Length: 102
Image 1: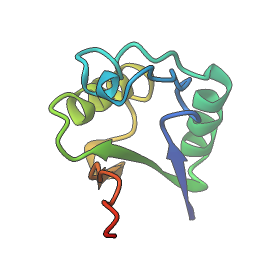
Image 2: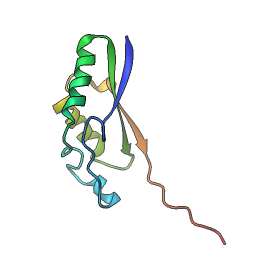
Image 3: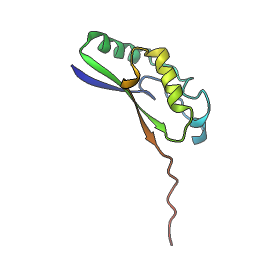
Image 4: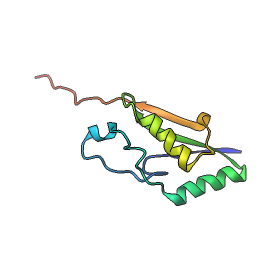
């Protein structure tokens, strides 16, 4: 059996461009993403075949209170067969532009 990792944003789910970085912190931002049904079905076929161990790998903003709960809810709706142990989230921190010293 091999392992396959699916990204969420832009792979399993359509990515919705944010007008401002703050938009990524809004409630329901991640819940409102539409699935790419063909990719969801491909993940299911790999899982169902028993040939692959399917993981979800997704980045989240470390200080977002909605990202992980909403991504878990989204997965619960579209890929409920992927259990919590197969959902991996990488925390990102927002780093401002470095200030230049003269």
